[in-house]
Image 1 (cartoon, rainbow, N blue to C red):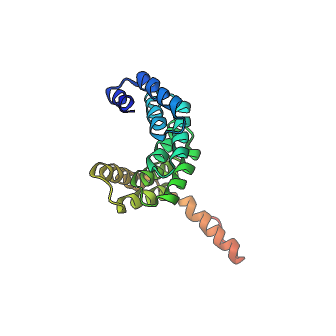
Image 2: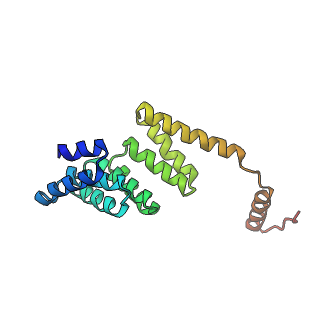
Image 3: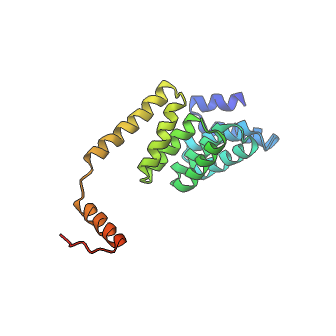
Length: 177
């Protein structure tokens, strides 16, 4: 196991895959070996193989939140955003204060355009005592969203639509402008 993680650290990802595969052949449900091989596959950008290993690692050791995070990130990088969101939501249901889970879930919601929901998770991560690096990453994302919010155009047609809906609900007729 140590050799496989050393190979990962040294950037020898193909060798790490072989080393972890040998460990998995001896003990198929060894979560650390599955996760290690998943990390190697992720570095090689072989997302489907990485996802399979991360899912197996999560199933073998569901209490290790990092297995969930790696699975969610792998799905997201493979452009499977909604399944990734589901993984992170399940993680947060079990580990409500997991900073990386909250952070990644917030980023995914922002990515799909659910900005307020993304903000909610990022702000939740800030309340859970993130590391300095995590805090800077979260605050930078929130700051970027603040800038984008200030630059959004005012749409007068939204006001007109709101007036029409209010009028329709009250039974009155509002003249169109």
